[in-house]
Amino acid sequence: MSGDDSAAEGPDDGGPTVDPHAVGRGGEGSADDHRAFWADAVADEVEARDPDDPVTIKGGVSPSGIAHLGNFNEVMRGYFVAEVLRERGREVRQVFTSDDRDALRELPRRLADTDGEIVELGDVNAGALGENLGTPYTDIPDPFEDGHDSYAAHFTALLAADAEALGVPVETVSNTELYADGAFDDVIERVLRDADAARETLAAHQDGVDGEYVPFMPQCSECGMLTQDVTEVDVDAREVSYRCSGIEAGDRFIEGCGHEGVASFREGKLPWRFEWPAQWEVLGVDFEPFGKDHAEGSWPSGVDIARDVFGSEPPVPMVYEWFTLNGEALSSSSGHVVTVGEVLGLIEPEVLRYFFARNPKKAKDFDVERLDQLVDKFDRFERAHFGEESVDDRLAALAERAYPFVVDEVREGRVRLPYTFAAVLGMVDDRELRVQLARDEGHIADDTPEWAIEDALERVERARRWAERCDNEYNYRLQSELPAHEFDAAVAAALDELADFVADGHDGEAIQEEIYETARRHDVEVGDFFAAGYRLFFDETQGPRLGEFLGELEREFVVKRLRREA
Image (cartoon, rainbow, N blue to C red; front, side):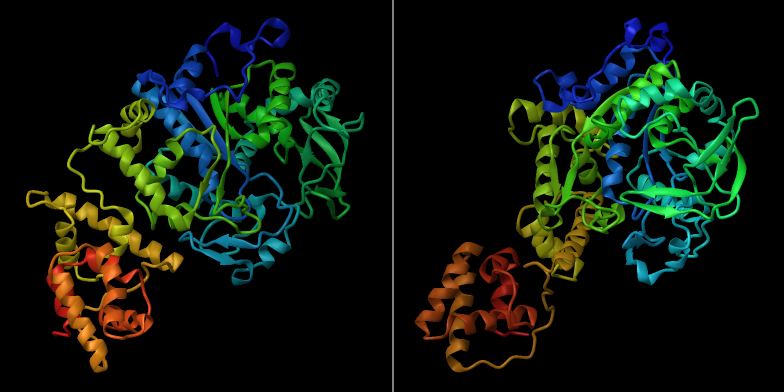
């Protein structure tokens, strides 16, 4: 992992003690340009240990439930640090372990199919899961029966596809394959050869570790379940004897089949608190970000196990804050998640990368209904990078430093339509009308290149899907042809008068106010007058704030439609 001699020093030998909460605080956005981006501060910590190339950055997840946006906390935090190190001339290997040797301990309520679409458990072969509780994920048939070797392979394929969609060159590593290839054999031997020391180290962090505890979980050769009941250890032969009594699953116990047998070190797994530091050792990990849940539990025990059991130094750590989804905690098992594929259908990849590039120490909420706010912040961030908007020193420094890592290419001349305006354009199907409306609002100039126009229109499609998903005030369709209608004389006269007002060049806010005044002057119920407008433009009786919407449209088109001219 590290190339200097201090890497093997333990706490009694003066080895470095790193506060995982402190690493990465450079993201606060100081005036110092080099430290404005938290990834630079992390890269400094990594390089301070003088690691050999390739520098290894790791993340990991147990493949349960749905591969979702929250899983990408570790992927994206690692990605930005990897990119900074590559910029400095370092060779970097970013790996993401699928902890697929873990046992399935409960049935997820929802899953994601091969296309990343979320489905209910009842929509798949649930028996493939229900019949395999207590079994490693790689031994569970794919419930979608779509060509993957296992449920774990299905999950990992989704993660890999999402990483590719975000432009992250991450290498997925299967824990099961590492065990099968013997990569863990030596570390397992070290744990079991001095099991007393291993137990003593773990007991300082975890209750219930007694003299009978064996830090290894063999897999039953009869039923395939993992068991915690080891009856004898033969370290020289690298095998254990076991009884398939079952496995704990939260507050319950999954009963085993009772079979007694012998398993090699390759036919089982280490418990998590040993497996995590074993991964650092086997993969030579130099940096790993993780959520705050591990900071007070698995990380302290992992540090002690790495130093006292394996005789190695743990990697540079960084704790990140979780983010919530629509104000509530993400939960893969309950299905309260959003997938990367779903998000990329609503916002550009660079906007999502920006979400992860911001300070990892601050809690955030990913509110799908208010994605317009996130996009607006990204657009401001981009303008700040190009000096097109005056911002405070902290944001200016962050934009200058981090923006190149967020976009595929630093390119001037991009057109970023405001997201809600893009949603308004999404009400229109005609491409040329969309372009004309954007020109009318000053977003597209006569000399705007075609590539920039096409890029801008891609946001329109995403904003349209956002409106449909949230069923918000933008989820309407402007009718290109005049809808069938029938109005009494008072309403018709009021519409003609409103057309004259629009023709005079008033903005959307003024039009909104005039709708009320015009209705009153003609003794028309305000609700009926709005309904008439919605009928003409949407062939509906309700819709968005009508005046403001009409203010966004081409004036001549609005005037003709209000006058009921085909």
